[in-house]
Amino acid sequence: MRYRELRAIVEYLRGERFLKRIQRVDDNTLLAELDGEEIFFDLNRSKNLIYKRDDFLQTKRYSAPFDRVLAKRCTKSRARIELLENDRVIEIHCIQEGSYKREETTLRLEFTGRGANAIIIDGKGRVVEALHHDPHRDLRPGRPFTPLPPLKELDRSPLEVENIEEFLYQTYERERERRLSVLKGSKLLQLKKQRRKLEELLEGLEREEELLEEAGEEEKRAQLILANLPSIKPYQRVVRVKDFDGDEVEIELPREAKTPAHAVDLLFARAKRLRQKARNIHIQRENLEEKLQFIDRKERVVREATRPEEIELLFPRKEGRERRGDRNYERYTIDGYPIYVGKNRKGNVELLKRAKANDIWLHLKDLPSAHVIVSTNKQSIPRHILEQAAKLCVDFSVDQRGRYLVDYTQRRYVKMRDGAHVNYTNYKTLNIERR
Image 1 (cartoon, rainbow, N blue to C red):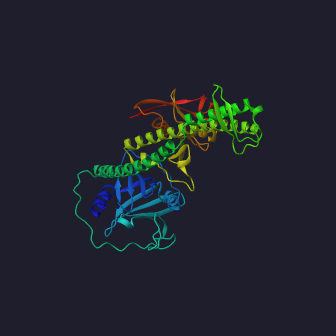
Image 2 (cartoon, rainbow, N blue to C red):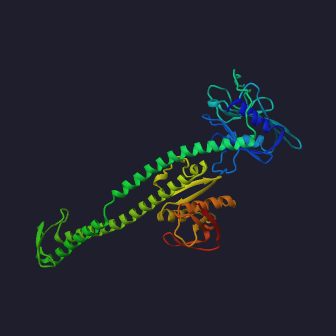
Image 3 (cartoon, rainbow, N blue to C red):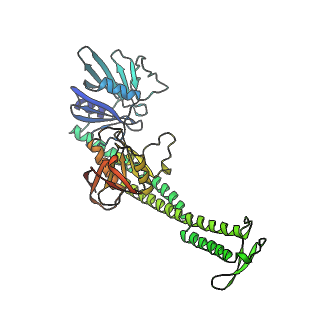
């Protein structure tokens, strides 16, 4: 950000304020609540911003040392905000006072382009923690803080803005549009690749009709050999018999057959395996088609998204060696609560089996639906989490716009009947609109 923008914003935030909370809400973004007013400080190294917004959806929780120190030393404090005269740096001076203790902390926000950082400094001028630890700068905890060399040139011209609050909202709107455009392009391309892979798997499946026809032929050969077994010599590898229509046919016995009777058993076994394979391919085809439908709906949600968080929610980072592409369900996180959505019937069954008794289960009322599980860890679930989980249930279950009822209850009250078909009791209902 330019110096004149920072100066205008700090002037807007001047005076002593009550800092109710400050926390990291994205990898490089801090949210501060000052006298009930939410301000976002984006310290992304490619573009530093300060903005306001009314549509924030928290999807991430951070608990690194920086985040724990930030919460401990800066929340519920009296705060004074100032801009340094010689650099694009804002300092938030926090004072926490108790019955026996007074603690002073400075949160230094450096809006210096690629060197952007947030540094927590104690009352004695020592580093407590930093958002980024640069190898070219000593920011280790306990070390005396050394400021950056002052900039030689700063744009000190006045910012021609009539309403700074409106300027902060407009800053967010511009950034929102930019991030949305980038995210939609990259994520739709990612989904296109996933779609292509599923379509290749679907096209590579054998045809059930062909397998069943082959099974019928093997079974017919077995029956003909069985019917003529007394007249077939034990050493014969090829036999000539009349079929059930009176026509003469030649049948070659399987190489591994030791006797004609053994050949009958082998042919019947082959027919059985082919029929089983046909049934399994039918199930595989249904699973793949349902996954493709899930991709369709995911693409639609991405295209219709109005906030970057709505897209980021659907593409969480992999955890360790986790391979999300192989699963029949997806795992999302909203404000620290894990939420699972079934991609197909197999995934719905898996979720029902893995869910704990206290977890929350959601499903569209009286309609086919993806099953959604909110992992509770035996905690009560906030209303906004339930509503977001219900929205996911609607988004991945229907294509038409309108209002839908979503039932939810604890998993303990859901009884599995046949596969993903269930009976449930003790439920409540949410009314969700798909716009």
